Image (cartoon, rainbow, N blue to C red; front, side, top):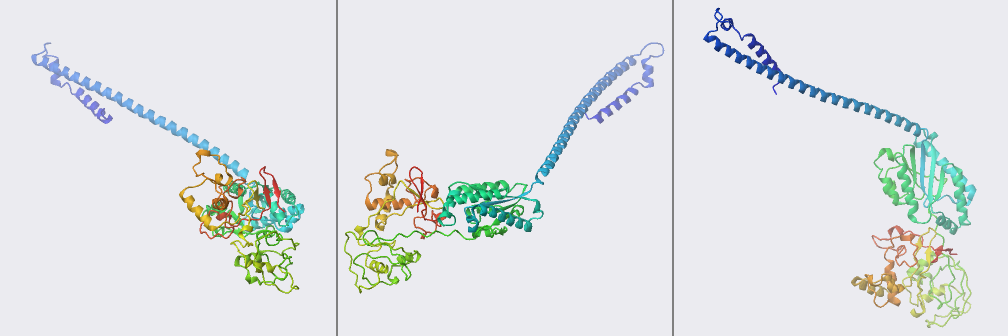
Length: 552
């Protein structure tokens, strides 16, 4: 289609052509020669003019058609622009309406948040321990602990947060009540586990938003609660400040460390140090505070292991005990009353180390020894010499001593005691403690280790005599192991960490639930690394029905 300007030019040419179509001579020719007759030349001229008229009509029709098409095109463009305008107008109206709604929502949110700002303290109660005098105060101690903690938090916020005077304070402390109460009772901090429950109730009543919460047994339960609470409130607009009391446990480090370079979030936090904080928390650059009036800054003391008076030699393996001048003397067995005491330096190295850590030994009556393999007769002294427990240590120098400090008259006198498979031993922190296994020859262990490298054996079959998988079991059955070989298999099974770690309560579980090297681990990377500091003092035992019994 021709542009509109070209069409206007065509119209101008059409008008010029029409105006000049008849010259004066042609007009005369058209009307004849004056006599009313058309000459020969006039007829040709008429036909020529007629052809011009037809051509002009065609041009006019084409021009009109072009004008109509141009109009339609302009009309379509107008309609399109009108639609675009209407769409833009509607979009603007919608945006204005949405903006008004957002402004109203922001105003409402601001109204809801600004009048209710608060600070939150999240504390791991298994690691942050209240002072002894507060725990021993029971109900009064719980009330006092709540008021002291509220005062400490108020002072901290006043120093670090402007306008915190009107903030509410929420405290969430998570702990395993049963395990913690039993541990406190075992340390004679409280008279009974029930006193800790009474202390917790009083603490909860001391302030409206203070909660000391029981999460039940299991190491990860308090950790899970604390991590989820922190995740929930760190982005909460109403929560103006968070006091995090878990610096004793590196397990929380990833949750806190991710905000190390977020200035807005890191300035919103304060780390609460009770027992010394791990190095990773100190390196974060986040403010650290202590509440010395509420929480103790050292670990709970481990209770001394009970010392049972040793019977005479021959009735059980002998373990040298503490040797010093102030200890209570224990009666030696008949036949050794006149032994000369040996100096402590005569003890083997590990036995001397153990003796230094043992408390005084209570006196025990002498008993008649059973039949035993004769031992070398020690040199006699005067009958008036005072009986001394050091004589046992001197005698032990002439007897076979194993690597654990035990000695005996002969190997035949040592009867290994296999742990009861129906009992689970538990410490005060509700962690499983593996019972001691009798000593086994290292060569036997190494021979079995080499055998297992060739073909793995079924632990359940060789130790318990049963295997639920029967023929589907991928491990070797064959003839069951007995004696030292079976005991060596128990040792090797303990080297594998149980998936449930110290929270396992399956009595028949053969895996290790803490480091089998009992704190003397020399491995660079140990599977039991997180359990190296575990307390191995047994305070409870659980039978196969799940019933717990305190160990006195």
